[in-house]
Length: 245
Length: 141
Image 1 (cartoon, each protein chain N blue to C red):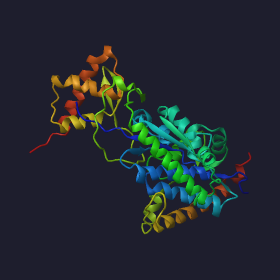
Image 2: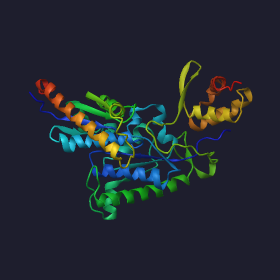
Image 3: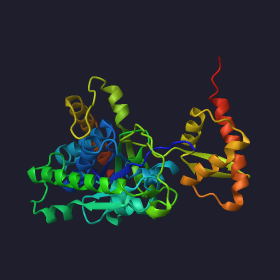
Image 4: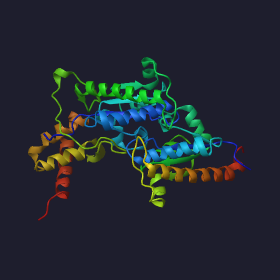
């Protein structure tokens, strides 16, 4: 079975431009992504859940996600749950500020001292959540944590992206018995099988199905059709990526 | 006749590239400094959630959207929310006209980014004036 992207934690900030607390969410998210946990976190712009494609909407299913909200409207947490999957954890800046006894953050463009302190406290809280989430096993197909005792650890290999506009999970639509089915992560699976030198032949079918099934539901009574379609698409991928002398 | 309603400004909320920050800075410059009485900032996150007040703001007023990348979330979300985009602005297009202002930094823009945001804000302010002039006659029809 090929190695797939290691588990990372997704960060979704509300970024609310009309509130100083929204600025706190943005800066705290950036601090985690760039300074505190750069190797273990990725982000996505909240609007991409609606304005983007299937790969973007798969984000919170693919990664356990921390939603960072500026106020109790909780746009990031609620919209992530509505359009992708329930966040694994969430933070509300106004609550953190009250809990920490800080003055109210002020300044949309330039935060006051209380706002800057709120950024530090929020970022530290998120980093702690990231560490906790990385210790638990995430089921990418179900978009939730699973029983530790019954699930093998996911294969882990580093990928480069830590922050993105429009860098959702790559997807590919495959014709399965006349119906277009969008499969999350398929381009990555093909790429890594190809790099491992696997040929598009019958012996690959089981590995291919099992790997695709980690990220996508495959009905058991449709396995044969999926196998046929996946093998056909992988053969096309190999032909396209054939190294010619 | 001038438009009585405000022009809604909707910037990109991206934190992955400097262009997102430029869009926000320009939106702040217009709504806080240049045309505070004539404009209203609407956050994209509220539109994503379907917040009623935000949807009403874009449905009832002409909107200027500022997008930081080709995915054009701001423009798409205003349209999805039943709003009318009076002017779409792409930071990249503006940058092509001001190549001397190269934006860098996300949490904090460099000087080039600040200058680009300012240039953009001036253009948006002019657009706001035009829209208010042009749409004034039908504003309350």
